Picture 1 (cartoon, rainbow, N blue to C red):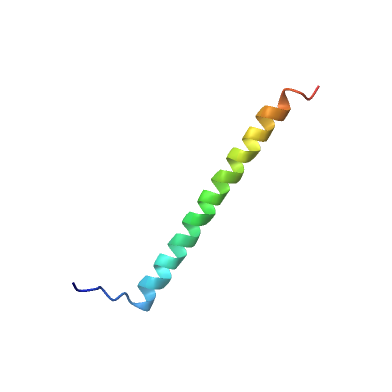
Picture 2 (tube, rainbow, N blue to C red):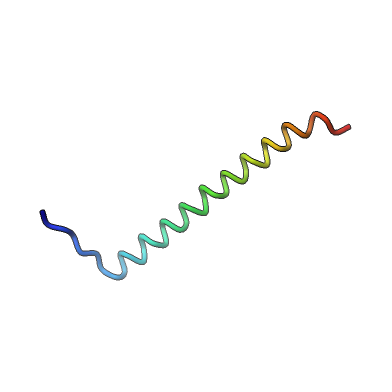
Length: 46
């Protein structure tokens, strides 16, 4: 079995893409959390 050796540029590109993907996922989690809080708490305000 032969493993592929990635260049430094490829590793940096992959790392940056993983960081961006992680930030997007974290943003979605926060968005859904806020939406849930507003939906639950919104009915009692007033």
